[in-house]
Picture 1 (cartoon, rainbow, N blue to C red):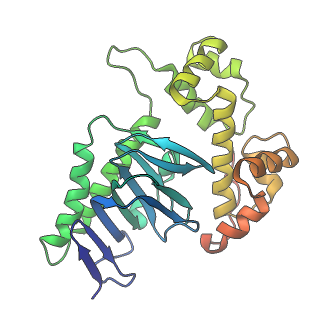
Picture 2: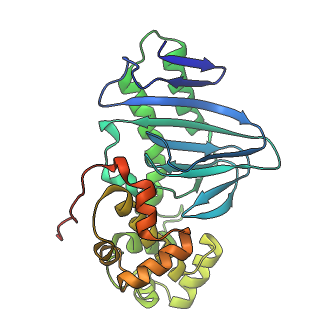
Length: 288
């Protein structure tokens, strides 16, 4: 027996012969109801995890517990810790855990642990339904169908991080600023420079960031830099000083201080917990 089915949830063993190197599923569920409490995996999953929450929950993002609204979706990379749930009431979610060459894409890093809310989740729910249907209705699943539906979920999230415009044709300055920040983390990022790129005054940009992202521009920049640093700590053997430089911190000392205060572990301690199976140490990418 290589899999098990419980109502609207299905799980698979590591040696399930129906998968291959391009795509492998470890589990999928649609509108699964959970009792009050939390799901907490400090070492993450052996595959990537994509979750669509249908009720209000608390989610740990970048070491901080935040509240998210219904129809919010979050994507965690493999081996990344995650913690979410509702201590006071039952809650439901749709989810899929997967891995494979089809998802070894650099663009996925843009959505790691970045909650996104969708006004109409019907399209997303259809993806989870089709994933389950491949195992409930057929003896052998169609792997391209599985891959396509997972990629649809991920690409819907990625649209938030591509150049987008409001219905009236006006450029969204907050999205423009966010994109500029994430693409230039290694550079000096004064608020005045970010605001100029977004086409706003610094004070107006700060106002929009606080209203829409619940943080200042400087806080957003630091969160992005720490998020990137976590990736390098987990997946490479680079020195702390190299990671600090690569993520735009003024010094290794300042990077260590901010990382420890935010995540409760020093960079070295965090690496000891989360590195392990990440693979051989990598080199920094060459500058274009």
